[in-house]
Amino acid sequence: MEHYYSENPTSEHDIKRIKFGYRGNELVFLTDSGVFSKDKVDYGTRLLLESLPEGLSGRILDLGCGYGAIGLSIAKAYPNVHVLLADINVRAVELARENARLNDITNAEVYQSDGFDKIDGIFDVIVTNPPIRAGKEIIYSLFGQSFSHLRSGGELYVVIQRKQGAESAMDKLAEIFGNCEKVDKSGGYWVLRCVKMGYVNSQGKCHNK
Figure 1: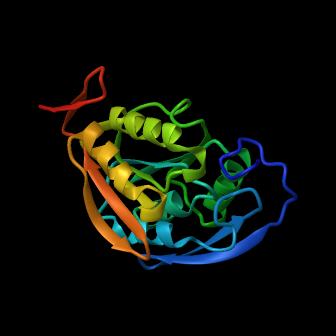
Figure 2 (figure 1 turned 180 degrees about the vertical axis):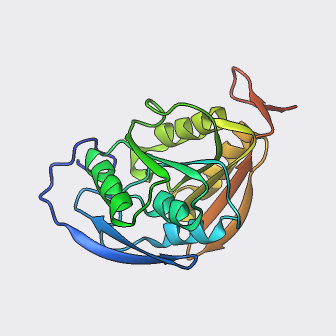
Figure 3 (figure 1 turned 60 degrees about the vertical axis):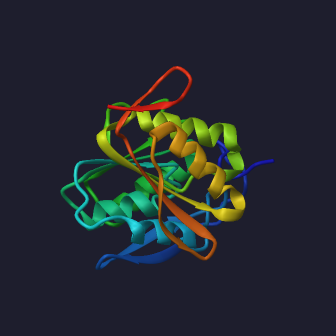
């Protein structure tokens, strides 16, 4: 069955234009069928954005960006950061690129990528509202790859519904990173934060330096 994690959605187009405010900026997003939360910026995304610390800096990745709500909101709020947005969904990537232009955002790049396949380099912060429908195997692989793509001291922020596996995700993240904290919860969603403090051995266990 086709879903928003599909690489090439075939559903009939249904373009919508929605507004979203974040840290003093009002953004406009084009959305479409075949992408996540096309009618409005979803509650989990809003909670994740509000849970991020003030004064973000450096290189930031929005993993599984959809039409760009998280990454473009960050880029607009912090013009001195460089944001990469990535998604497997070609339709979502096209929307995110158009939304960057629509909001006059020049400090963001959008890539069509299956996870980290086409993403290079190291990041200061990775944020994700992960594609739950893709299944735990894919989600947990993204967690492990996120660790590898963070600088020492870099942070991963994840939002996930408790009923969709937040507790087990927290356990897995703690196994990979050696730490994981719940920084916010509301409406059945948890925002989890991990900090890269060491390395992962061949068994996937974290060893702090």
